[in-house]
Length: 358
Image (cartoon, rainbow, N blue to C red; front, side, top):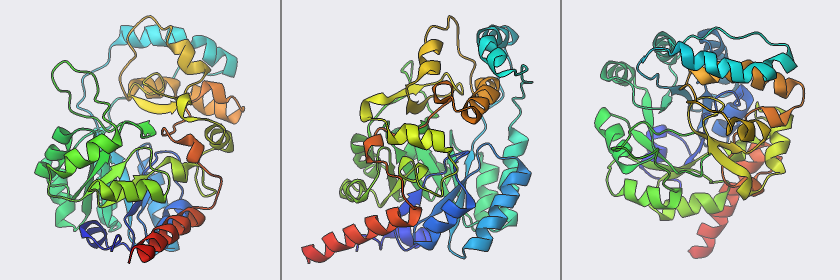
C-alpha cells in the first residue's frame, strides 16, 4: 500500500503528500483543502507576524479537523550588521525605490523572539505538525514541542544535514533537491565548498540509506510520476510546492502564477539577490541587473528587508520583472487548477497503477 507507511501513520494522514510551506503564498483555503483531501496542508509562516500566524491557525482550524502543519524559518545566530554593506546596497537600490516612490527601510535583524513566540502559538493552538527550514531549532525548543506532542519535520539538502536532523530529534526529514523552488534549506557548510546543489534523484536514496526516520522527497515533483519515483527511491512520500503555487487557492498573485505557467525548465535560476539567501526562481530583469552589482550581497534577513517593498510594489503595479517569482525546475508541469483537482488526480492515478499491478 503506497499510502500506508511510517510517514502517513506518524502524520495521521491518508496520503503521503505534503503541501510545502511556501512563505507568503499559502492561504487557509489551500492548507485546509490539501488536509481535507488526505494530505498534509502547511501554513507558510516564515514571514508572519504573531498576530497573522494566530489568525491563520484559527481559520484553518475552522475549515478542517484534519492534521495540518506550520512551517517556520529557524533564525540564524545574530552576526551583526555591516553599515557600509547596507549603505552600498541602498545606493544601488535607490533607482528602484525612486521609480516606486519608496523610502529606505529600517533594518531589523532580531528574529529569535519572533521564532519563539511562533513556537508558543503552535503549542497553544495544538497544531499537530511543525516543520523547519534554514536549520534546526535548539534542544530546548525541540523538547518543548515534543512534550506537547507536536510532530517535527526538518529539512536537509545533504546526507550530513539529514543525519543532524535525526540526531536533533526530528521525526521526519525533507530531502530537498536542488530542483526545489524558493529558498533552499541548506544550513551546513562543508569545508570551503559552496552551498550544495544535489538533485532530488541523487539525494533521496543516499539520505534514505543513512537515517532511520521517514524521508520525504522534495524538488521538482509536480504529479503522480514524481511521487511514485520518490517512493521507488526509498522516500515514504513527497513534498510539493510549485504544483500548489499555481492552484486557485494559492496566495500567490496572478501575475506571478502566470509567469510560472508561461515559463520553461531553462528559465529558472538560483540567486540570493532578493533575500540574501539562495532561492530558485524565474530569471528576470532584477536578477540580471543585480548580477552587475559590485559588492557583497547582505545576508538574509537584511537583503530581504532592503528589497521587500520594491518587490511588493512591483507586483502591485504589474512589474513581474522586478520581483521574485519562486519556482521549481518543472514549470512546464504547472497547471491552473483547484488544489483538490491536483490531489484527486495524483491519488486516482496512483491507485489505478496499483490496481493494474495486482
